[in-house]
Amino acid sequence: MSFSAIVILVVTTILANNVVLSQFLGICSFLGVSQKTETASGMGGALTFVLTLASFVCGVLYHLVLVPFHLEYLKTIVFILIVAALVQFVEMFLKKYMHSLYEALGIYLPLITTNCAVLGVALLNVQKDYNILVGTIYGLATAIGYWVAIVILSFLREKMTDNEIPGPFKGFPIVMVTSALMSIAFFGFAGLK
Image (cartoon, rainbow, N blue to C red; front, side, top):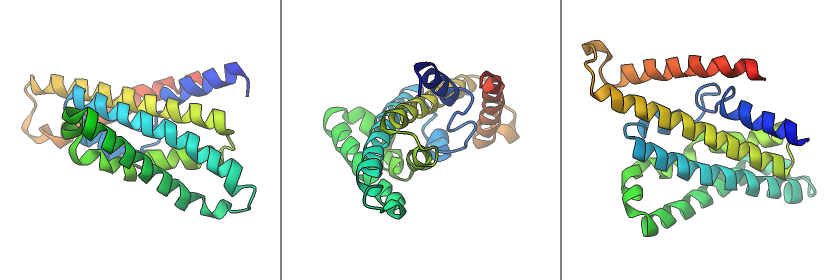
């Protein structure tokens, strides 16, 4: 894959094919952790680390172990185990060195284990037949796209707390409407492909 093709892959993955706003993966943490920008940014950072590292490790194991030994049918189980181990590592690291962020993320940090975006990207790397390097770059771009989307939503949610919202739209309904409008806005980038 040429350098220009990789740049196009990164830009379209972040904007036009955003994992949350166009593929609808990772919605649980996207809606749950986006109340404050600081927490959303921390979640985006943690997910970026896990998603990038998971893409790399899953790619290495798939191409160097599963394929040569014809064990491709085990990929889903192996990928789930890798993601779970990486999330445990991140959780221990944050608990020891960034305790305030660990407390702020709360239950959503262990939920990265079940975040379908992480497993989805690992499986998409296999489905799209990306090599280890391109798969890792795709994982990083996907995570950055998630990070951009969750920070934008958290910024908008913080601004909404200062404004008067009609009764039926207070709380979760206005978040869903805002997410839908963001999805439509990001859909405008589809012309970049």
